[in-house]
Length: 231
Image (spheres, rainbow, N blue to C red):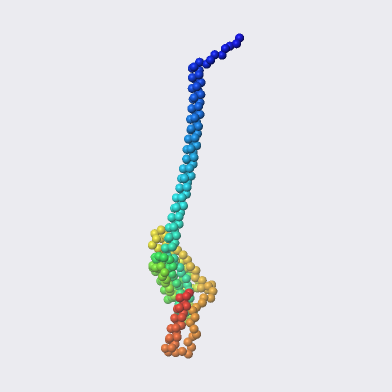
């Protein structure tokens, strides 16, 4: 017996069409959602990259500003240095020279020394007084004082003042509140500094007396002073 297939009713057809339309709409919605998610993800990544770039740029700008501030501070700060050099009064003397080669004043300038002689004679006492007295040293200015004298002297001694080696420590402030104090140290090593040249002053005035001798000695002093200016 053969069963005849009947045509689907309109309700069945409507239901099928509705299911098809629903499937199509769902697919369209899913595709649109996927595109929206992809677009949002790309926008988020681009925003994150832009944020990282902006952060890196800000860090670079801050670093550049900080470096510029430090460079400006280094250019304008005071620089104090100390050295012991052959003296202006002749080859038997040594002077301590303190100079500020910076661009601003060194304030509350103080010194310490680790090899004070005992007892202190007149020269060493004056050096101690110089070191213990706070002072302001303007830029491009210097202080020079006797450090050591070598004899023999009339009292039978062969030296006066400070020794040939030690360490001078210096501390000072500036007008920049960002760096309230600077510190440095300088070695005194007179016995290991080679043979220091002394300005030529001509032969000793043997046999010259009176005013001519005085004039000759004055010329010697002037020549030594000019030679010292070149040091």
